[in-house]
Image 1 (cartoon, rainbow, N blue to C red):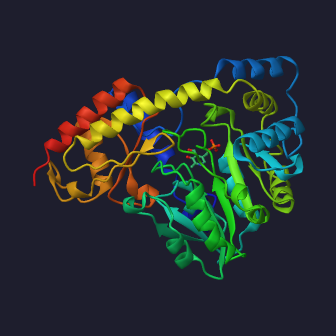
Image 2: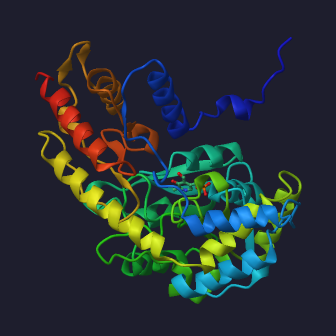
Image 3: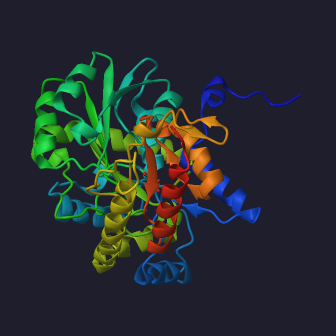
Length: 401
Ligand SMILES: Cc1ncc(COP(=O)(O)O)c(C=O)c1O
């Protein structure tokens, strides 16, 4: 007899972005050329100095378990980074290191949520948030943040979403998928609301913090209102800023009692994250930061190219993202047009059509809580952006009214 699976796992959807990556790999293995805009990670490799630090650590015997909080030296380097870049003050016992920001988010919810608790999630959201919330028995409360609001959570929408059951607000800025950035003035308005609701904790997922354009600056609410420090969890990691997705290092800064609870969960699950990767992450945070500026300059050029090419396609409206490496074009005017297999009534159907007709892989907005939009990653070459957008335009031109 097959092993029975728990109800909570049966209800869990596979990660949409991981599924898309698999679909592209399968099609490529069948010999099809696919222009891939689904990538959720930098296309560059980790900067050389960080790789060297990892290799030297391995050669030097850095091959053992570390404490479950993460190495003290790395936690000190994280405190230095938080003071330097975010103007917030933390001590190493308020920091925990895990196998990616994703593990941090999972453990923080596991440590705090009871059945029936509510978590406010602005949409469009990162695909994993609602599933992680549900997996921990709680209820995602989705708040729509339309393009007219710059895809940002407004104080009014936040106020309306909070109930006595709200435990967390989770905010991702710069945002995957919209690229919207919450700057100081946006947070100032949200903090005013949060001050009226002291039972609501705030998780800020700042993983794309370094990828911002045109002088836009991300803001941590803790830096605005010191009173927020007791109920904020800052989540960040090495994956995007340092092109270190495969090293699996994320971290959080927060109140010591919550950090201790997360450390306890790590101690009973993964024990710790990889030792030599922690040493390399310490080097990344303390070493030369120029590779980040170089990467951001490349992303900026690609952003400008993809935004302008998409806006040239009739029926597509693409706003310019302030950060991260995604665009989130509005394709609602195209819905209802007819393709070879009948009307295209949803972003999901458009995604399938573009894959079949144009050999272009993009993500559907539905997976991010906003139907009628697409997500394209520009962590890919300008050649792919040029050919991909041209192919998308040609495929859309073939649709009839
Ligand atoms: C918004 C957001 N948060 C967290 C993560 C996970 O990052 P990590 O590699 O640190 O687990 C991602 C990865 O795509 C992301 O887009």
